[in-house]
Structure formats: C-alpha cells, structure tokens
Length: 76
Image (cartoon, rainbow, N blue to C red; front, side):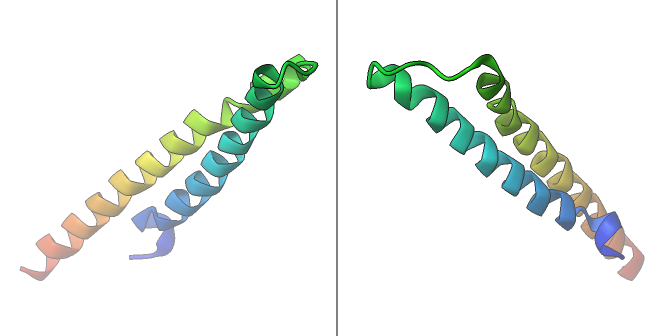
C-alpha cells in the first residue's frame, strides 16, 4: 500500500497543524494572564488550527488502521 492509502502522511500533517494551533493558543492566552493588550481577532482564529490538526491526525489513523486490516485480510 502506498503512503497515500495508509494515512501516515495525514497523521504527520495533522501533528504539525496541531502544534501550530497549540502555539497560537499559548500566544493568545499569555497576554490575557499577564494583563497585557490582547491580540487581534485573527490570532484567535489561528487557534482553530488545533482541532483541525487533531481531526486530520484522527482521520489519518483511521485510514492507517483500515489499510493495515486490508493487508492482513489479503495475507490470510
């Protein structure tokens, strides 16, 4: 099976997007806790990368599991 069918690439991309979203969450909440000027609204939209990355990784894991099951069924 190719990497496209197995979903491993989606897991990697999802992990990167999740980390970017996590950094955005930290960047937006730190000024609130330190009583600094809050960041503009687009910074808060960048926080949506976190659940998107999680969803991408989850879809990639399901695709990997399905590809692994297909390989197992084909062998035996």
